[in-house]
Amino acid sequence: MAILYAMVARGTVVLSEFSAVTGNTGAVARRILEKLPAEADSRLCFSQDRYIFHIFRSDGLSFLCMANDTFGRRIPFSYLEDIHMRFMKNYGRVAHYAPAYAMNDEFSRVLHQQMEFFSSNPSADTLNRVRGEVSEIRTIMVENIEKILERGDRIELLVDKTATMQDGAFHFRKQSKRLRRALWMKNAKLFPGLRKHCACRFSCLLPGMLGQLKGWAIEAFA
Image (cartoon, rainbow, N blue to C red; front, side):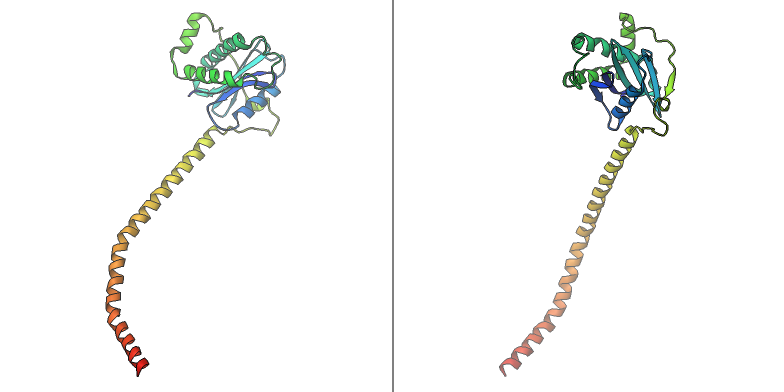
Protein backbone atom coordinates (compact mmCIF):
# COMPACT_ATOMS: atom_id res chain seq x y z
CA MET A 1 0.00 0.00 0.00
CA ALA A 2 1.46 3.37 -1.03
CA ILE A 3 -0.55 5.54 1.41
CA LEU A 4 0.22 4.21 4.87
CA TYR A 5 -1.38 6.58 7.37
CA ALA A 6 -4.14 9.20 7.49
CA MET A 7 -5.51 11.65 10.05
CA VAL A 8 -8.22 14.29 10.39
CA ALA A 9 -7.59 16.92 13.08
CA ARG A 10 -8.82 20.25 14.37
CA GLY A 11 -5.67 22.03 15.45
CA THR A 12 -3.94 19.38 17.54
CA VAL A 13 -7.19 17.55 18.39
CA VAL A 14 -7.30 14.31 16.41
CA LEU A 15 -10.84 13.50 15.30
CA SER A 16 -10.07 10.33 13.35
CA GLU A 17 -7.04 8.40 12.14
CA PHE A 18 -6.06 5.11 10.56
CA SER A 19 -2.64 3.48 10.18
CA ALA A 20 -1.78 0.55 7.92
CA VAL A 21 1.58 0.16 9.68
CA THR A 22 2.83 -0.17 13.23
CA GLY A 23 5.23 2.31 14.76
CA ASN A 24 5.18 5.93 15.86
CA THR A 25 3.73 7.41 12.66
CA GLY A 26 0.82 8.93 14.57
CA ALA A 27 3.20 10.57 17.05
CA VAL A 28 5.19 12.08 14.18
CA ALA A 29 2.00 13.41 12.58
CA ARG A 30 0.84 15.03 15.83
CA ARG A 31 4.23 16.68 16.34
CA ILE A 32 4.00 18.15 12.85
CA LEU A 33 0.58 19.64 13.60
CA GLU A 34 1.86 21.06 16.89
CA LYS A 35 4.70 22.87 15.14
CA LEU A 36 2.77 24.26 12.17
CA PRO A 37 1.93 27.97 12.38
CA ALA A 38 -1.75 28.89 12.19
CA GLU A 39 -1.21 30.81 8.95
CA ALA A 40 0.48 27.88 7.18
CA ASP A 41 -0.39 27.27 3.54
CA SER A 42 -3.30 25.01 2.68
CA ARG A 43 -1.01 22.39 1.11
CA LEU A 44 2.25 21.32 2.73
CA CYS A 45 4.70 18.43 2.45
CA PHE A 46 7.33 17.24 4.91
CA SER A 47 9.75 14.40 4.28
CA GLN A 48 11.51 11.97 6.56
CA ASP A 49 13.62 9.11 5.26
CA ARG A 50 11.61 7.53 2.43
CA TYR A 51 8.23 8.91 3.47
CA ILE A 52 6.38 12.17 2.85
CA PHE A 53 3.67 13.69 5.04
CA HIS A 54 1.07 15.51 2.92
CA ILE A 55 -1.16 18.08 4.65
CA PHE A 56 -4.31 19.69 3.24
CA ARG A 57 -5.92 22.44 5.33
CA SER A 58 -9.49 23.59 4.77
CA ASP A 59 -12.54 24.67 6.80
CA GLY A 60 -10.43 25.00 9.95
CA LEU A 61 -9.36 21.36 9.78
CA SER A 62 -6.18 19.53 8.80
CA PHE A 63 -6.24 16.42 6.64
CA LEU A 64 -2.93 14.57 6.72
CA CYS A 65 -1.57 11.41 5.15
CA MET A 66 1.82 9.70 4.94
CA ALA A 67 2.92 7.95 1.74
CA ASN A 68 6.03 6.48 0.19
CA ASP A 69 8.17 9.19 -1.40
CA THR A 70 8.02 7.37 -4.77
CA PHE A 71 4.24 7.80 -4.92
CA GLY A 72 4.39 11.43 -5.97
CA ARG A 73 2.20 14.25 -4.66
CA ARG A 74 -0.89 14.44 -6.85
CA ILE A 75 -2.54 11.18 -5.74
CA PRO A 76 -1.95 11.74 -1.98
CA PHE A 77 -3.51 15.20 -2.29
CA SER A 78 -6.34 13.71 -4.36
CA TYR A 79 -6.90 11.30 -1.49
CA LEU A 80 -6.92 14.15 1.04
CA GLU A 81 -9.42 16.20 -0.98
CA ASP A 82 -11.65 13.14 -1.27
CA ILE A 83 -11.42 12.60 2.50
CA HIS A 84 -12.15 16.28 3.11
CA MET A 85 -15.29 16.11 0.97
CA ARG A 86 -16.57 12.97 2.71
CA PHE A 87 -15.76 14.24 6.20
CA MET A 88 -17.43 17.63 5.75
CA LYS A 89 -20.50 15.99 4.22
CA ASN A 90 -20.99 13.81 7.29
CA TYR A 91 -19.59 15.90 10.15
CA GLY A 92 -19.27 19.48 8.90
CA ARG A 93 -21.65 20.90 11.51
CA VAL A 94 -20.08 19.24 14.55
CA ALA A 95 -16.42 19.02 13.52
CA HIS A 96 -15.52 22.38 15.09
CA TYR A 97 -16.47 21.43 18.65
CA ALA A 98 -16.35 17.62 18.69
CA PRO A 99 -14.02 16.02 21.28
CA ALA A 100 -10.94 14.01 20.36
CA TYR A 101 -11.60 10.83 18.35
CA ALA A 102 -15.35 11.56 18.27
CA MET A 103 -15.59 10.33 14.66
CA ASN A 104 -12.95 7.62 14.82
CA ASP A 105 -15.22 4.58 15.08
CA GLU A 106 -17.03 5.44 11.85
CA PHE A 107 -14.60 7.50 9.82
CA SER A 108 -11.45 5.42 10.36
CA ARG A 109 -13.10 2.80 8.14
CA VAL A 110 -13.55 5.45 5.43
CA LEU A 111 -9.91 6.48 5.77
CA HIS A 112 -8.88 2.84 5.34
CA GLN A 113 -11.23 2.14 2.45
CA GLN A 114 -10.21 5.20 0.44
CA MET A 115 -6.55 4.61 1.33
CA GLU A 116 -6.71 1.22 -0.36
CA PHE A 117 -8.56 2.65 -3.35
CA PHE A 118 -6.14 5.51 -4.00
CA SER A 119 -3.11 3.29 -3.33
CA SER A 120 -4.03 0.48 -5.69
CA ASN A 121 -6.44 1.88 -8.29
CA PRO A 122 -4.62 3.58 -11.21
CA SER A 123 -7.83 5.35 -12.26
CA ALA A 124 -8.36 7.07 -8.90
CA ASP A 125 -6.54 10.27 -9.81
CA THR A 126 -7.85 10.35 -13.37
CA LEU A 127 -11.43 9.84 -12.19
CA ASN A 128 -11.24 12.74 -9.76
CA ARG A 129 -9.69 15.04 -12.33
CA VAL A 130 -12.48 14.24 -14.80
CA ARG A 131 -15.02 15.08 -12.09
CA GLY A 132 -13.23 18.35 -11.44
CA GLU A 133 -12.84 17.53 -7.76
CA VAL A 134 -9.08 17.98 -7.60
CA SER A 135 -7.66 21.47 -7.60
CA GLU A 136 -4.58 22.12 -9.67
CA ILE A 137 -1.52 21.07 -7.66
CA ARG A 138 1.10 23.75 -8.05
CA THR A 139 4.73 23.02 -7.35
CA ILE A 140 4.88 22.30 -3.65
CA MET A 141 8.15 22.58 -1.80
CA VAL A 142 8.88 19.43 0.18
CA GLU A 143 10.52 20.49 3.43
CA ASN A 144 12.54 18.19 5.64
CA ILE A 145 10.61 17.35 8.78
CA GLU A 146 13.58 18.37 10.94
CA LYS A 147 12.98 22.01 10.02
CA ILE A 148 9.83 22.13 12.14
CA LEU A 149 10.97 19.86 14.94
CA GLU A 150 13.28 20.98 17.70
CA ARG A 151 17.00 20.52 17.16
CA GLY A 152 18.01 17.02 18.18
CA ASP A 153 14.38 15.95 18.50
CA ARG A 154 14.36 13.72 15.46
CA ILE A 155 11.55 11.18 15.49
CA GLU A 156 12.27 7.85 13.84
CA LEU A 157 9.64 6.07 11.84
CA LEU A 158 9.37 2.44 12.85
CA VAL A 159 7.71 1.11 9.70
CA ASP A 160 10.72 -0.67 8.26
CA LYS A 161 12.22 -1.50 11.66
CA THR A 162 9.00 -3.13 12.81
CA ALA A 163 8.74 -5.12 9.60
CA THR A 164 12.35 -6.20 10.00
CA MET A 165 11.76 -7.24 13.60
CA GLN A 166 8.68 -9.20 12.60
CA ASP A 167 10.58 -10.90 9.77
CA GLY A 168 13.44 -11.70 12.15
CA ALA A 169 11.08 -13.14 14.76
CA PHE A 170 9.35 -15.26 12.13
CA HIS A 171 12.71 -16.48 10.82
CA PHE A 172 13.85 -17.33 14.37
CA ARG A 173 10.65 -19.28 15.07
CA LYS A 174 11.00 -21.10 11.75
CA GLN A 175 14.63 -21.98 12.44
CA SER A 176 13.78 -23.15 15.99
CA LYS A 177 10.99 -25.35 14.69
CA ARG A 178 13.30 -26.79 12.04
CA LEU A 179 16.00 -27.48 14.66
CA ARG A 180 13.54 -29.23 16.97
CA ARG A 181 12.34 -31.38 14.08
CA ALA A 182 15.92 -32.29 13.12
CA LEU A 183 16.79 -33.23 16.72
CA TRP A 184 13.66 -35.36 17.00
CA MET A 185 14.50 -37.17 13.74
CA LYS A 186 18.06 -37.75 14.94
CA ASN A 187 16.85 -39.16 18.25
CA ALA A 188 14.30 -41.31 16.45
CA LYS A 189 17.07 -42.79 14.33
CA LEU A 190 19.36 -43.35 17.31
CA PHE A 191 16.73 -44.94 19.56
CA PRO A 192 16.44 -48.36 17.79
CA GLY A 193 20.23 -48.77 17.76
CA LEU A 194 20.48 -47.72 21.39
CA ARG A 195 17.75 -50.18 22.35
CA LYS A 196 19.53 -52.99 20.47
CA HIS A 197 22.85 -52.10 22.13
CA CYS A 198 21.27 -52.12 25.60
CA ALA A 199 19.60 -55.48 24.90
CA CYS A 200 22.92 -57.01 23.83
CA ARG A 201 24.70 -55.66 26.89
CA PHE A 202 21.94 -56.95 29.17
CA SER A 203 21.99 -60.42 27.56
CA CYS A 204 25.75 -60.60 28.07
CA LEU A 205 25.56 -59.54 31.70
CA LEU A 206 22.51 -61.62 32.60
CA PRO A 207 24.31 -65.04 33.02
CA GLY A 208 26.91 -63.51 35.31
CA MET A 209 24.25 -61.76 37.37
CA LEU A 210 22.25 -64.98 37.71
CA GLY A 211 25.39 -66.87 38.76
CA GLN A 212 26.18 -64.27 41.38
CA LEU A 213 22.64 -64.40 42.75
CA LYS A 214 22.81 -68.21 42.89
CA GLY A 215 26.07 -68.03 44.85
CA TRP A 216 24.55 -65.58 47.34
CA ALA A 217 21.53 -67.84 47.79
CA ILE A 218 23.70 -70.93 48.53
CA GLU A 219 25.75 -68.99 51.09
CA ALA A 220 22.61 -67.69 52.74
CA PHE A 221 21.09 -71.14 53.31
CA ALA A 222 24.35 -72.97 54.10
